Length: 114
View 1: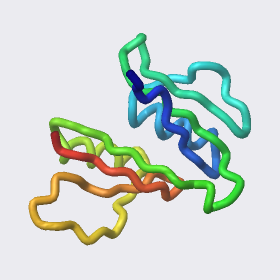
View 2: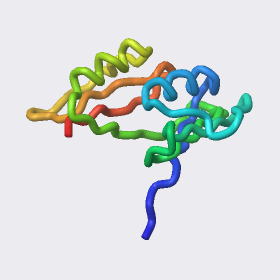
View 3: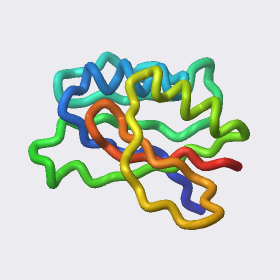
View 4: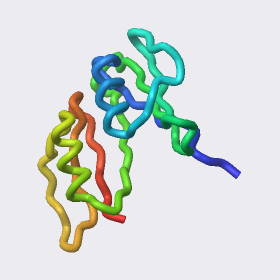
């Protein structure tokens, strides 16, 4: 059986990405970060997927996407916007259950209502 062990996320600024994603997901560094790599894991040994942050060599190297599921989409979207996320212009279909945001590096992600 396979399970997701890590999502690798290309970023322009590893330190800024560590600050944003640690706060957004309530994660911590698994080991000290370098200028071009960091690994984040859930705090207190909670289960969850590791998020690896890699310095992207070019804009084309920044291909990735995650969906974040929540019971309270409105509150989570507001919290993420306060942390530095922005809304990505998107043509939403009728009865859509997700909101498309961008992290401070401009990387898109979705907040999905469970």
